[in-house]
Length: 378
Image (cartoon, rainbow, N blue to C red; front, side, top):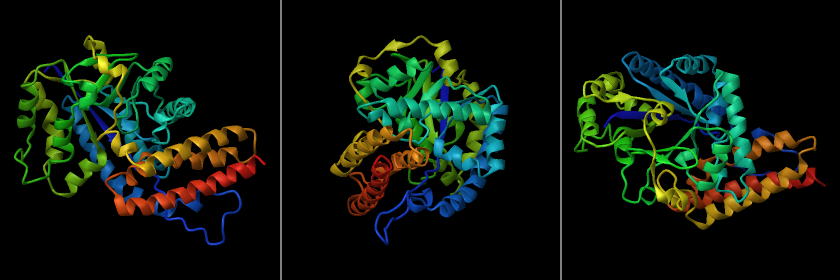
């Protein structure tokens, strides 16, 4: 292996609360009707301290030769406005030449699956403006929500000037190939190496795992034994925090990983550097398949998820008709947060009983929002 591209995703959802209308549906809703912002803020304060420690660890790793891409979700960045210290910590990372911040969807939605991709295009633009405002960055790499890939979304990203995309390296996409190249499409694509990413993200603290303990030299040996140009890893900050809480050796791993790779002739690169350095190869399935982290069935695999997606599309279409109305921006913001991927995942096939209860709750919220949109247009 010649290079490793590591991207870390940082996300804290703006979770809806259990919503029970006491006196029926009425009035223009505020955010607090559907979201418990005190609870969201409390979680940010707690998790934010852990994120600060991780940021310091990544800075140490960068000083030892590491390069990283950061995928900060829109809901997380909005919460960062409540915590200036945390926001400043990410600003310091953004200023390092070995760090790349990626583009994303502003509401961490799956809008790339909608029949009309105008909302997806708008989300990408809103998020890009947010990065410019907060960090002075114009992102060149795009990471869709939960590493989602669709051919139609790729066409829009190319139009918007993105230079590359990171997506899930699932079997249906790879079709027998290994995720160790830059793949050719409307824009070059790096596909996540699922097994090695999950060795770090999911199994690192498991004492019963045959790979335990996973030290940097061992992991670097595994990578060095793979033939290819660039291997792409994608991890979540929340998983790294869990390893840290479990008193694992994750901090030592992050610090020492770049030097372990370097000693084996492997360089850490950002996604933009990877596409500059390596020639893309063709992957025919990119034109016919779509993928998302842990499989499309987790995002839209049951009746409740399909219904919720269709209802989102309907409310979005009705919302587009009231752009000149007084309460449009307020209703649009609420609608945005009701598209977060966690909502769909929480009512998926693996959450049968609780998923049903959550689905009823989310439909109630979306129904109330739709009522307010229709009243605004009356």
